[in-house]
Image (cartoon, rainbow, N blue to C red; front, side, top):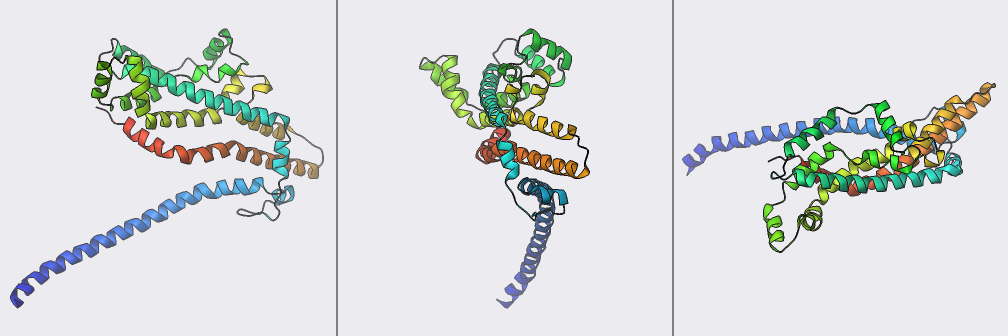
Length: 309
């Protein structure tokens, strides 16, 4: 018995030692990983926190500018000035409307295009796919696009936010790859029961594709909410300005303001900076609230949509 225990002990020691070495390596990796991720988190969080807290700072605290995490004086004057703007609520409604309508129409249109393209039996499928891929690398250019939108009568209209952004072949590819994951047996059994292709699409494909649809909706929703170049190029009516264009307008007017006295100039610049920061917080708050609810669909939709047969 003693001999057997002596023979087993070296093997057990080596096994135990390997476990210790693996544990130490894992711990070192975890510590380094935590340090790197903590640094990246600080790089992101500290500027964001500075914007948040600066939006609540008084004009005196902003003029001093000697704080990073907490100002000496807190005030709601910046937000009062923003909410007193009569055009802000209309801009918020325009942003909400164009985001909601744009997301629904864009997601539905891309799904309608992606479903037949995901079927190998579609005639001309390679030609349609090639035409779609070309649009990912080449566009008509700014001036031809402006002339096209002008000829269609969409200048200074709400539909200039919706119709030009209906199609994106990048989103179509994600949906195509996702639709291919749906078993053919589901469609075959539905067609045996008398369902048409439209019925299969609306009653089977779309309900099973919620992760992919949520991913596309998130992509397009963030773009629609943050977009101001469409307004800058095609809209001159201030009644159709979204929040982002209103923020751009506030910043441009603040930079163009000129005064003679140095003290007045400092007061105006700090006040306008506070208004800018408050407007920034109002514009990013809806996305920050919405993103956690869509994140789980976003991750699963991206992974599943990336798998190819």
